[in-house]
Amino acid sequence: MDFQLKTLTVARAAAEKSDVLIVLVGSAPLTAKDPLSALIASARKAGDLPDKAGKLLSLYHPDEVVASRVVLAAVGDGKPASVRSGVIAAVNAAKAYGPKRVVMIFAQEADGTAVGCAVAAAADASYVYTTTKAKTSNGENGRTIRQLTLGVADAGAVGRAFDEARATVSGIELAKEWGNRPGNYCTPTLLAEAAKGLSKLPRIKCEVLGPKEVQKLGMGSFAAVAQGSAEPLRFIVLRYQGGPKDQAPVVLVGKGITFDTGGVSLKPAAEMDEMKFDMCGAASVLGTFRALGEIQPAINVVGLVPSCENMNDGRAIKPGDVVTSMSGQTIEVLNTDAEGRLILCDALTYAKRFEPAAVIDIATLTGACVVALGGVRSGLFTSDDSLAEALEAAGEQSQDRCWRLPLDDEYAEGLKSNFADVANVAGRAGGAITAAKFLQRFAGDFVWAHLDIAGTAWKSGAAKGSTGRPVGLLVSYLMERARSGAAQAAPHKKAARKESGAAARKARSVQ
Image (cartoon, rainbow, N blue to C red; front, side, top):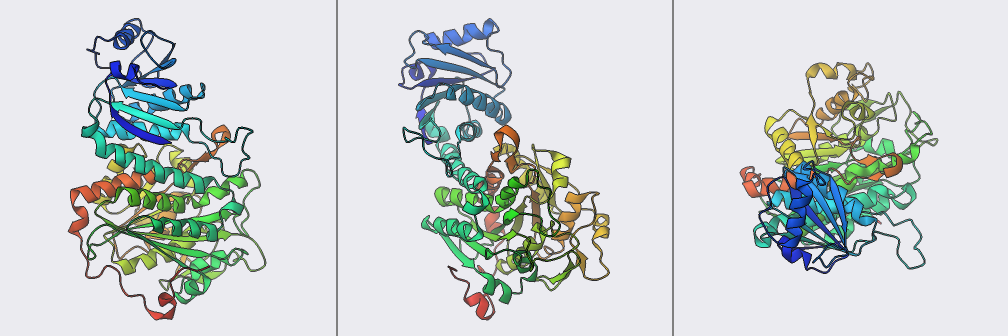
């Protein structure tokens, strides 16, 4: 969708050409005396438009309004959650009219946060997946809304927030696109091609490693998961260089299982199709880089995506097998369906070479996190209070929220093994936490956080599809870090350590 920002009053918005005019009405009194403002005030006084966020009143051909249809949407106190509720309700209502051009205006003053939430919510409500659908007779198979003009009291005052929100939406929709693709349209090779496409954006570079390079690097845990699939693995390395070369980067690690059968520990057939979403962590990394390439913040970011399928043939790993990770730690594979942590642990070890300021891994890791938090908040695990606070604040700012769970050492007791340094599962109790404790073993050399997005990365049922989360959270965190100067506070001696051995020197694009 084409988003535009414009300085508009309610009176001027009434004169704008559009198919639908959406007016976002807060709980504060309206002081303007133009006909549309007077109509809104009357509707509120009569109780036809309550202040509760998300309540609507639709009008047809109101006097002195160019648009044939007007949707009044309550946004209550104007806080991010309220704005999001109001905008989603209004855009969903407007879609019923099949509009191509929509004007949406804040009736009262709105700050940058409200503007950002409005853009994100409008894009979310109007998104339609089209890649594997046939076009209709008129050549259209996507969203009907082509352009949305957002009207505010002073466009100049919120211009930066608007631009960042528009770029973030591009990233979210890229993450949705790849998350929604079926497994035959999203193999590790195709995902790597999408990552290489991001290198067309300024300051972004991409390298892709194949099976031979991964094996030579000693990523035995990652390679073991991939060995049951006919599709070759790919290890994607993205770099965004927005800060000085000696600035320590933030490293994002995204789980990229493009389809997960569970392996020998086979999943139930019901809803197994949704295991195409098991690469949404990887998709969120690609989406974040898309946003960074458009915003161009002064920060360095590295993205690591271990990508493969978890399939089941005669070469697949078996329960009881012991594999050796890149860190040298051996792992007893008690459940082949706990494969995400097996690929992430090698990526976390690889991250150490960048001497990172912080490492954040993002993964659809455990059903236990879905049980704990449902689809509202992502699970957050970290032993660093400052990083936890920053990620939680970014989640609230972007309305892509997370919730911190514990990492007490006692939770790791169940990971003990008689046959290896660690087991890959620890039973059902506290499953999201024990999975995080497993990853923590491989993140001891840097500040680290784990986001379990198993409940938030996609929706099931009638609204089945990728949500694009947590791109909003990650972009918000990185932008705040760039603005606050935190990125400059943790320089390292080298931008990245020299990769040792012939395998690393061959870490180039793999066809």
